Structures are given as C-alpha cells and as structure tokens.
Length: 344
Image (cartoon, rainbow, N blue to C red; front, side, top):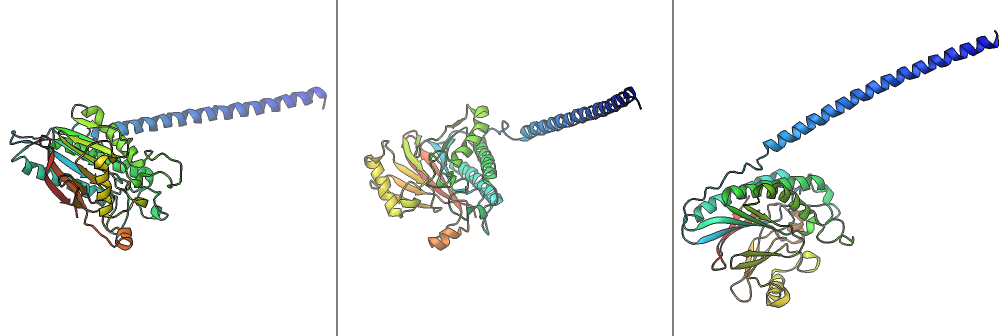
C-alpha cells in the first residue's frame, strides 16, 4: 500500500468520525429542543395552575358584612388569638385540629357579635395576635419529633390560616385592625445564637398573611409590622398593651403574682406609655387579675392546643382549649363584655 493510499483511508475514517459527531450533535440539539419545549410546557401548565389557584382563592372576594341598623352606643370587638402552636402534634392536637378550632372561634365570634349588636353598634374589630402561632423547631431538643410539619410548612400553613381568619373578620365587621406580637416559639436558633429577637418566625408568618390581604383591602384593613417586643393597643380612649408573656420571669416562666407586680411596675412608669390593661398568652391559661388601681386588669388567654404533656407533667397544669373575645366602649375607654370562647 502506497503512502497516498494510507492517507486517503485516514481521511475517510476521519470524515466518518466527523459525520458521526455531527449526527450525534444534531440528535443532542433535537433532544435539548424537545426538553426545552417540555420544560416550557410544564412551566406554562404550572403558571396556569398557579393562576387558577389564585382565582379560586377567596382573597378579593370577601363578602360585605351585614351590619344592621345602629343601636345604642358604639362598641369594638376585640379578638385575642394566641398560642396556636401550629404543627404541634400530640395525641389530641395537630395542624388540622388547629384549623378546626380556629374556625370554630370565628363562627362563635360572629354569633356573639350578632347578640351584641342587639344593644350596641359593632362595626369594627381589633385582632390581637399574641405569638406562638407556630410551634417552631428550636425550643427544646425533642421538638422536631413532636410536630407534623416542617418549619417551612408551619410558616405557610399558619399564614394561610391567619389570612383566612382576618378575611372572615372582614366579612363580619366594616373595619378590622390587626396588632401582632411574636412569641418565643418563633425564635430562630438557640438562645445563645446571635440572632436579633425580632427576627422571628411568628413575625415572618404575620408578614406573609399581611401581604396577601392589605393591598386589596387597604380601605378596610389596618395591619402594620411589629418590630417591637411590646405592642400598643389603642381603641378610642381605651389603651392596653399586648405581650406574649415570656418577657416576664427567668426562662419565660413566672407566677401570676410576679406577672401582676411586673405589669403594675410598667404602669407606674417602667414603661413609657400609659395603659389600662395587659393581654398575655404564653401560659395557655384563661385568667383575669386586677391591677393595683382596681380599674386595670391583666387578661391571660388560653391556647387552641390541648394535651400538652410538658404542662401536665412539668407544671402539673392543664387547660381546656379556648381564645378570648372582648367588646370595648371606645368613648368610656373600658371593656364592656368578656368572653372565654371554648374550642374543645
């Protein structure tokens, strides 16, 4: 075989290899195009599904409240919703039970408001969110084994339930104001971690719900962010503070007498804002204690949770699930009616 014959065979082999490579490249390009089209199709379907979900969501379609004729003096409904512990799992409590009990509260609040309207005009509601609305993950070592949803799922589930609850209030009252306080279960990381206290999962959950509602209901809904640790509540001449309760006492636990003394000191100048009453969660217990002047009171509110083993074993205490509903006369600056709304 001559040298020229050898070179021609090599050229033919190289040409064949090039053709194979080109064919493989064309196949790869076709596959890329097919996958891209499929990806775009899936993205299109996902976008359509998201659009349909938004359209199916009741947001923006909140029914107008049936207020009825004006009667008697003006009163404002005051909901104290606290310690939902969303995603806590016990033998009698989980995320679905939380939803059912919160919805039961809104049903009962509407019925009680209808009764109140027979003697007073109730056009406004103030909703106080007291913290520990989520269960969290960083409060004790076994916590990840006592939940039915991750922290992300808690964030979404509770935010959606808050959105539903405030929407329901907007269907009962002409105006709604939300005042939110965050709790210790929303803490991110351990107590030793250098995380600002108000970088709190409760607060993040409130913000997600707030963003969903405020834009389309700006003329009927007031809901501001809550960077401070003590929230101020003002309804006409009525002034109160909203705290979670872990602010008082070492490790977030103290006796009722200690809490009363602490709040009395706040009222006597320890806190730079005059207030009459204080609303507290954290202890999962419904109670009312008079303050030093006999006019103000400290109102403790229960939880939607039940069967809390820590409370029953560690504190020898238990509480039937409940939340709090008040009516306030804004001119007289006082609470006119007090309800413990049972949810068991």
